[in-house]
Length: 403
Image (tube, rainbow, N blue to C red; front, side):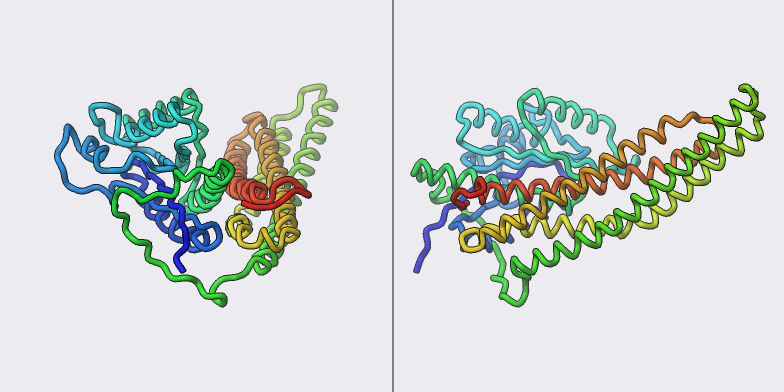
């Protein structure tokens, strides 16, 4: 029997340096459609110049695309990293012009579309960096805040994949929820341009884990991650103890010598702290691969649980709420770890540059703490978005559930 299906059109705009992310977004949408066409009666269709552009003549290439690509899309996704793009005659680049058109439409009719903009924060090799392009990106980034646009940073393609899955879920919740509440039919429509069919196969039950399997896997991953974090915390506490002892010994020597502590004694005490810091940095660095793997696995499970909640919400609300609370608790743990790393990094930076050994130890310690903070932040963002996604489906505790 044929099913009614709502089509939400997603427009993608970005410069050329984000080709991997563009391809990954296509995969994300195909995967989401496997579930959503069945559970929500919603299908996403991705529109981009690669899939819907064709040779033509106009004032410039972007002008041709403006006439070829549909303007009645439901969700605009913009991406930017280090390249801004080529001027069009009407804007600084094609991406900026496409964003300006979307923003103008939004400002004239707020309910007409959703805008999602992502900025990649990953480092790039200096040899591949165009300073002029980067300056334009930075200016554009600053302009987003003035326009009232909340952009979202991401560090890697995996980070981008998890975030867009969850953000698209929340946008669909809002769009379909409003649609149902107002009894409108503006989303159910024929798409004006022929869209390429998505190629995928329905996963069989024995190919993918179920909701309870994911909860068990999350519990296991969280436990393993917790053990790694406990080791790292213990190392931090040990370094703090050694630093405090050396500081107390130095203060005592200063008092006993009436402020005339021998330079050799001062160097010995300072370098003992430096040695402890370098040992700390080496031990944390050894734990980083396991820590990164653990946070990535946990974030991936959080994202999958957040999305699969759509399937189980009507029959397993209690399990969904338990999943939500587990993720919220994990988010709090990661936030505390981020705060600890930030505070400790500040304390290390404030150490006076007394010897070259200490300076080197400070640099190594700050570098490893930066990696810890970055890893924690990436996972924490995904988990927080998963919690928000589930909250959108659950509604308030004790209330009625639904998408």
